[in-house]
Image: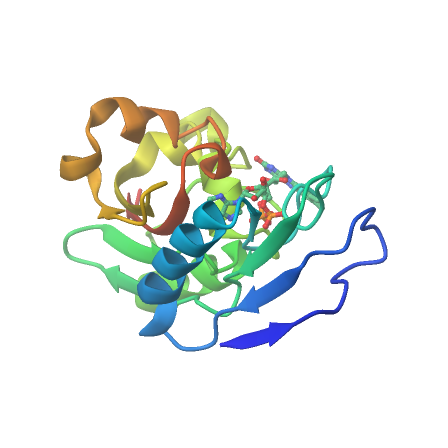
Length: 188
Ligand SMILES: Cc1cc2nc3c(=O)[nH]c(=O)nc-3n(C[C@H](O)[C@H](O)[C@H](O)COP(=O)(O)OP(=O)(O)OC[C@H]3O[C@@H](n4cnc5c(N)ncnc54)[C@H](O)[C@@H]3O)c2cc1C
């Protein structure tokens, strides 16, 4: 884990108190949980950044005291060709996901955005439209499970978060509800 006190972008109006960059796969859930609990008890807002492509800079900007939780290094992807499923960590980019799927199987694909540097965390939680939309719909139509750290620092999956929250994070923007750690997706 890297912690710095530097501003993370020239677009920032208010610099973060802390920028927490996750570096190791195993640390993902622990540090994300600790960040949520620590930020809550110190009344510091968390800005979660996956691909950093938010149009308004909401992943690295706030008018309140805030810390950036940067998960772009956490980008593992596992493709299950026979089950037509994939597990993707929220810091992976769409380009990394498309490449992994293509390497595993040429006919399989995942409907998502056209820009390869979008992060799975922000993109999929916002819906995700792209070139395959006419035939297969949008990204969230193909999300079958997710891991999320909730406001109390608990790690939840689809079964434990319940269908209402699972519905909300598929289009409602992940940051409104917690820190998304990973998605399980169906491939077409
Ligand atoms: C050049 C460009 C091209 C684009 N093309 C498309 C396109 O083809 N199709 C399309 O549908 N959209 C497109 N978008 C929009 C893009 O999908 C959204 O801006 C998306 O939110 C970016 O996600 P990100 O992870 O890259 O960005 P970030 O800035 O990291 O995050 C965006 C938002 O999601 C939150 N967030 C990020 N990660 C997590 C997480 N792990 N858990 C909870 N909340 C999280 C952030 O806090 C922020 O509010 C494009 C945007 C840009 C700038």
